[in-house]
Amino acid sequence: MFGNIAGSQQESNEALCAGNPVDFKKIYDATMQMLYKVSFRIVNDEEAAEDLAHDSLIKANEKNLTFPSINDAKYWLIRVVKNASINYIKRKERERKAYEKVLYEDHRKADTGEVDLLKAESISKAREALKKLPENLQDVLMLREYADLNYKEIGRILGITEGNVKVRIFRAREQLVKIIGEDNVFLPE
Image (cartoon, rainbow, N blue to C red; front, side, top):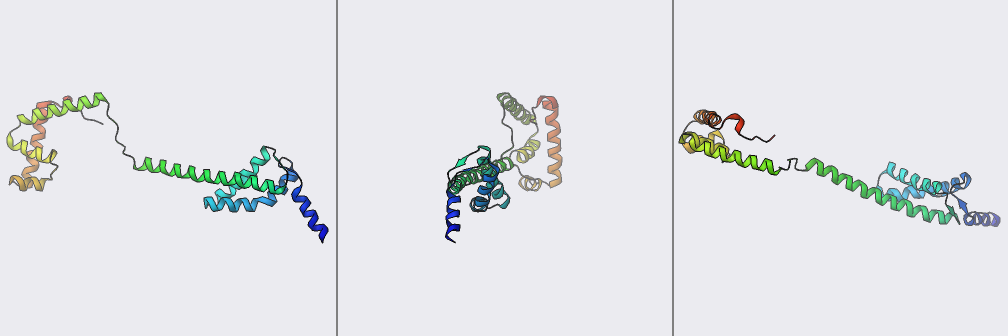
């Protein structure tokens, strides 16, 4: 019975080479379950924890590392899997933030100086043309386009029917096109 204990102590203190298939199997058998548990506690994802635990063992194998004992292998592998798991969580958080940013980001295009100039010219032309309209057409168009009121609200303000508001807006827009010309107004895409 004592010989058995001494034998197991001797096994835990012998040097192990992770590049050697026999030693690698000893390291794998002694550490895989523990590495999985450490990783799972951090990432809270079974598949990811298993992958990270395997990856840490593969690193030791690929680097052909030699450990003085199985305990040294455990400590090294725990550090590796812990760091890999923390990095995994950080990467997932960055990805989540990136997706969130893309999904909820303002998708309007930034205007260039040329676009700004064309818009300013168009606004100026539109204001000049608006002044040339009869007063009744100016009023409905300004209330609709600049005050952003609906037809019913405009009718109530001006004391006319909703239908009459629609007709006046249609006529005002038609006359503006004739005054300005369809091709002389910048319309951003």
